Image 1 (cartoon, rainbow, N blue to C red):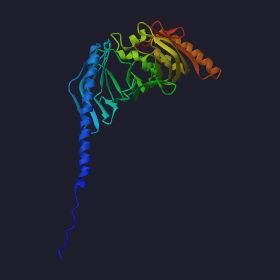
Image 2 (image 1 turned 90 degrees about the vertical axis):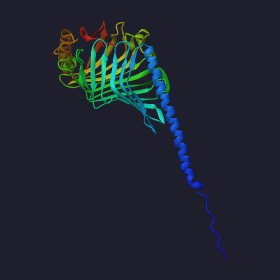
Image 3 (image 1 turned 135 degrees about the vertical axis):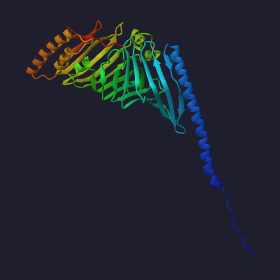
Image 4 (image 1 turned 180 degrees about the horizontal axis):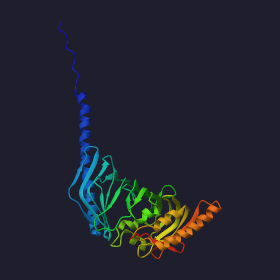
Length: 355
């Protein structure tokens, strides 16, 4: 009797997973190339928009890699200059995002930055890390975070001295300001943090910190922030914003300079026609005398030594009275007016300049 051969099963089912993977891979590769082309086109469009607004933007080689799961953009010899004369340059700048989340980016300057201050010259910035993250870039206001780890600031030949020589960390944050808990407004929240800052030799920051470290954290709400998107003019990005009534609201901060400490607050700060800050800041200070005395001994610079001496004497008397009554916190008020910073009747230094 002849035996019947067992039926042969089709092997088509074995190939199905591989075919599916191949289809997905081809589709994903198409998406990746489409995404990188969109990123390239939008980058070039933004560059052209800035140039039309009077900005200087140039770079050498540009590469986009990272297939299959990342988008990695490298710009070499990047220079971005504002109409005001301020500029930023990097020998290499890299930006990276996940291909499946292209609205969140991390930007790194591995070789440091060169900052150009209008009329003051260049400062080289290098550190263990200089990076920025941006998320929600498809929203009206993205969430931006800048971080410098152990930065060193080196004034270049012919430039005016930079007040800070080095720091442990420098951080800057920008995020949308929410009215209540969910409704975005035309305002943004900003925060600046400096940890372990050291002033340049014989400079005002070194004197203020009494040869110690300067630590500060400041936060505020920038009103009418959309006006900053115009890019500014020769006077800077804050000039049009100021003319339209822009202001800093709900300013809060902490400051530690050597043995001196203070918390500060201000409901409203603006800028005058010359770009100098106007308004007043309330301080609750602990041991302010050493910091003010340090300003008296600072080297050449904008500090008014006579004013600092008078303020130190007044603060010393108030501090002695506070100690006699057991009061640890000494209330002080800084006033920005007429282009100067005043402590009571004593002018200390020029008011901070926004543009």
